[in-house]
Amino acid sequence: MTSRPISVAFHIGVHKTATSHLQDALGTAQEAMRADGVCYFGPEAFRLPGRTIPALFGLHSKTTVPHPPAVARLARMAADGHRVVISEENFIGALNPTKDGRDKPRYAAAARRLNGLAEAMGQQVDVFVALRRPTTFINSAYCQSLFGGNFGPVATYLAQNRPTDVDWHAMVRRIADAPHIGQIIVWRYEDYASLFKPITRALVGAQAASHLMPAERRINRGLSAAAVADVLHRQADSAIDLPATVARYMLSVDHGYPAFDAFTAEEHAASEAAYAAQIERIAALPDVTVLRP
Image 1: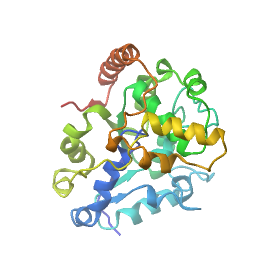
Image 2: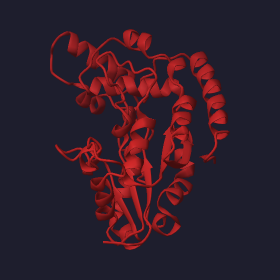
Image 3: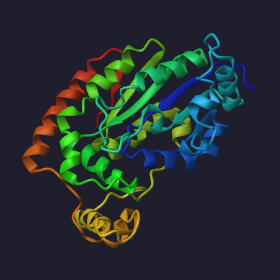
Image 4: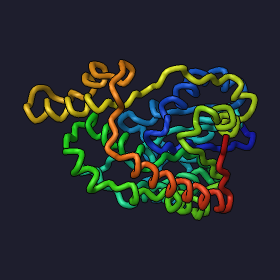
């Protein structure tokens, strides 16, 4: 077990910002990175019964912080390395946590959960977060709700999940204000492909990042408009259960079907302007770095 100082980086997502793509690259290279002293743990390490992050790090314990279970767990995870990298978007909250998809403000518990984990570990945690234009984020969140078996109409979902309700600045500011959080690295989902190397260098270090290669395909392809219509039609007729996974491939965007989009061009433009303003406000926060192409 290492006696070297350990640094901790936590990639929190958010959901639907190419998290699976980045996790795939990290997972593929994890053995090579371990040789460079970087130990990576993705969602597969934290989504088994009794092995969630709160359970593994003793976050429900009433002992005085730092929690001995958390300190010991971190040391075991680091082994002989110097950096532990965690990627688990569900830790900050669910994408669609209620049946109707409402969560206002979104990821309201993120700062408290991250700060509690860092406090239990007895050290600061650097946070890595990707953001996305609210209209396309909501499009993707609605499609994910279909995969989860919530087949409410699009109009009902949109009435409860408006682009103006997505306040990324407020979320990042709450995290930045948490006393046990270190640096916060932010990027736009829309810039992810061009920023893959800077993101991974910041996340795992230059040497370990040299082992990382982006997958050439999308890991989780979204639904087409035809697939969404098919899902809702089949559900109304009680034809089959959870048909979204079938419809995604039968009526795939990759086969030329237009992607699902619940918004007009004007609504996208307004959302983009508000999103850009939020990014600038985020960039002005202390200890926050916004990566740009």
